[in-house]
Amino acid sequence: MSYNMLGHGKPVRLFVAGLHGNEWKDTTDILEDISTPEKGSLAIIPVVSKGNYISTLDDNYFTEMGQVIIDAVKELKPEVYIELHSYSAKNLEKLTEPDRLKHVGVPAFSRLDHDVLLGSVAPSIRKKYFPQEALCLTFEIQKENALSKQYASKVINRMKEFTSRDEFLRCMLNRYPKQARKAIEDYRNFYGLSDDETPIL
Image (cartoon, rainbow, N blue to C red; front, top):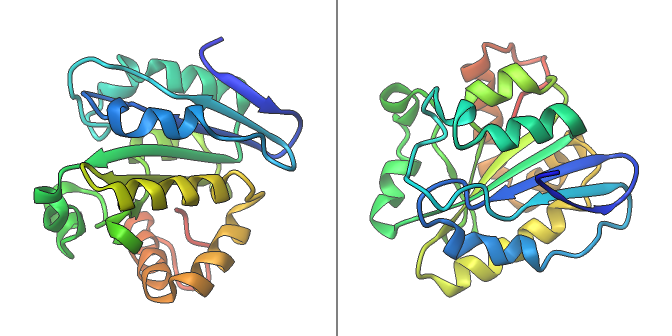
């Protein structure tokens, strides 16, 4: 078993960190310190790989170093899937630029407090391994930014209590209305959904 399990029953959540390169130095301890959710279960993989940096947008990532994630997803069938990454401050504009979808093939990240970024996971894992109603998100912590890490830790601990995508969206629309509406619009466009269809995140 490649993951640690906290709690039991549904909803099932899977949180992963340390996906590539040296990101584990910024993210792993957040998952190692997380507590058991009040309802349902939480599987954690604190370190996926300490090896080379291969982007999760690379088609080979989830068939090579990220295979452990796919194995866990197939076994657990989580309703909530969270990836925890870190980024250098110099890349902030690149990650949040409005034209990221055109340049990189995925929508721009939304900027939360203390430069924590929120986005979707790679289309290759989202479309192939999760149903539309699942909640699949990426959070990015800014490296060498203590406040960013502290806030991300708070967000991740809140995420472990969400039981559905709709519950998360209601919270986001209340806390970050501008970012939430933009994220919903981005993903409707990205996945070809009409305005009256439920957005995929």
